[in-house]
Length: 563
RNA sequence: GCGCCCGUAGCUCAGUGGAUAGAGCACUGGUCUCCGGAACCAGGUGCGCAAGUUCGAUUCUUGCCGGGCGCACCA
Image (tube, rainbow, N blue to C red; front, top):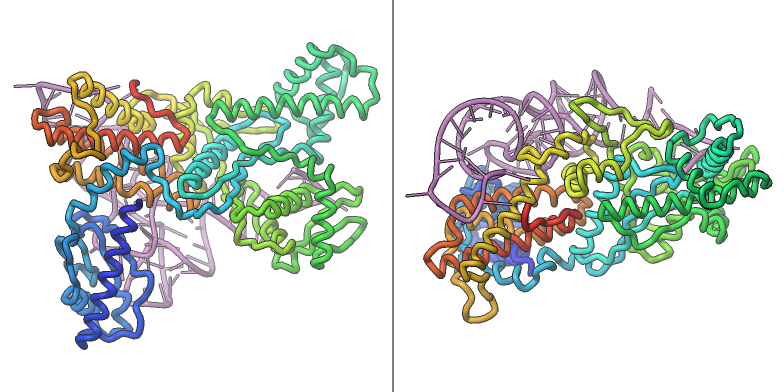
């Protein structure tokens, strides 16, 4: 149960009733009530628990100044037992102050729902696909991939909690030019390692990992590819290297806490004729033409600046053609919502892709592309330049080794996708108060410690289902109420972070919750001599533990019991 | 030149068209006889600039300035 939503509905209904009563009494004139009636949570605590701007919205049509409209609504408002106070304030807000009892309902609910607390059903079981990282299998994962991995995985978790049926997918670019290039690089390294003098391809992959891969192949198979026909040799080298690389990528991601449901091969689209079928569909819809031996997508017909090549004059389809086929495949799998997470360097591709989806006859609004700004690395206060082509970059494995999975993931999830991220290696690594990861995890460890101490003293977290349930209304300290309020907000926050595709909200929530807990801890002694108060507080503490643990887990972090 | 993202406190960043724009770090001072001081409390600075829409703009529109990234028969 989402308590905030429940209260909102209740208040909206009461406001509507007040409006009708006011109209009947001739105090207020209006044609219709704007929907939905906006109920926000005021920033200022003294402005109550909820506030509505309805009077300001209706002022014009009611031909009355906003404060007057608000006064009329208040006059005819039936407070009931829930609302303690309502007041007209500022330019015409109506502020509602509720009885604390509405917060207490969450206390047993968290215990019952446990790992599920925070879930909602606003996704209504809709199928959503999140495709992320999808790095080239020709190299190692870098910082940008790491950011995508953290964001994508967290988003998938949040969507899942919000009631969607989520599929996490990795698109493997195992076809096209870069594979050709990769083949040449592999071959050059292979021959080199066997003592031959070769010219390394100019646009080749210079990374040490390519050499390592070939060294391992030699260890396994020796020089048996040496005398082979060049075409066949390259094919076999690539085959070996790709499976090794993919395995490595999967392992790196797993160490980063990310597991996929589906690994989707681009090559399979070529092999299964999916690209031809896609082209055919585009042709039927009138978006294909030929020019200078190449096949073009008439993107200008759907508002693009220029047309795009789908099949080169040499007969090989472009990456774009394969990507369109991939998206056709996604929609044919009946996803209600398709989310891609791309690096900002691909932003030029976004509207093209959406228009291609439209040209195929699918609803382009079902495709969302999250553009993730690039990551800059700071070390010792200096920017570390990264270059993939020359092989000079920090890999995901190195990152995990150096700063740890938890810190790395938190740092990536902490920032919104569209902020240019400066990743401060030294800060992420530091085990000090400066590091926000520790602040949040410390709160969890502290909670566990309190519970341990209580346990040792013979005080258990009270049952909530029986008549032994604690007296919730003993929790009246502002710090207790603020903490409760935050806990009550969780389902809303999760739903919002999920539907708005903004996982960074969860990181902030975690920090806020930790902060409220620490404040509560300082102000309210949990293990005390007043039995009823102690039991109520123990329950609040355990609820805090559950919520904090849930949020940490969704972000892919551990919730340590000691640290 | 065209397009996308960003510009908020000294730094890194939040911020649903609303009331007095927030957090962490850094800086200064304070809190603890006790459940974990990796804690709590207090202290002050800021929405790049200019128009427009609106009862109301950090938020929406346009223009300009500054930074990043794109604009291949690469991916």
